[in-house]
Image (cartoon, rainbow, N blue to C red; front, side, top):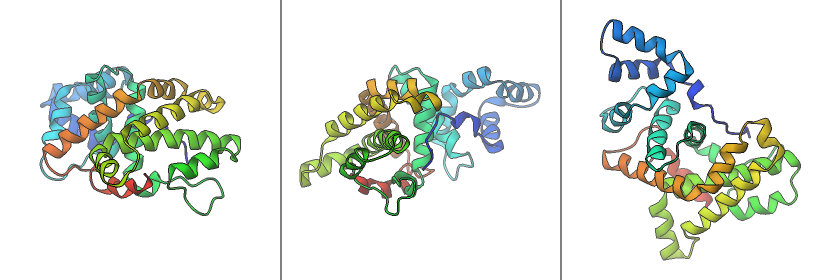
Length: 241
């Protein structure tokens, strides 16, 4: 299992650029200037912060041709900013997390050489005690990722299960996810993957990040069926509670 990194912004496609131009560019010289600005990382980031892109994604009807990386980055960046979370690296990481988890098999943890995926948190926590150094880091990151994914995208289902079936409530996911992000941030491999500050911030601001994702999910559902699996394919991964 590969380590998720904050790299959505380097995976944008030609279709993503076309969407930006169609939304912001207009015609002629203005469009050409925008293309040049998108090639520069700093100006690209400023362009991606334009609220018009956020609204265009929310209000689009029909099939979007943009990549999941672009789609999730623009949405996540805006909802995190509105919650006072200004780090682009954190937004990039969370967006990549959602893009990865849009493939249901990616939401399951399989250790190197492992035959059976670990679906439940108690299995992962038990595996941490016997894991080698690299797998322990992967497990801590995955527990944080899955806790954020589930509590951020499926809050209503968590409430329903907690009330009707005695499953853990959202506080459990927040405490578990925040603690494992903090432990992952202290691991030497977090520095190798340039994730030390990202994990540290997610550990400290897990609640605020989760609430921001709840807001994003509500906005998507209010305008119709979400695309890129955020409300369909991703639901199949919820069984890991």
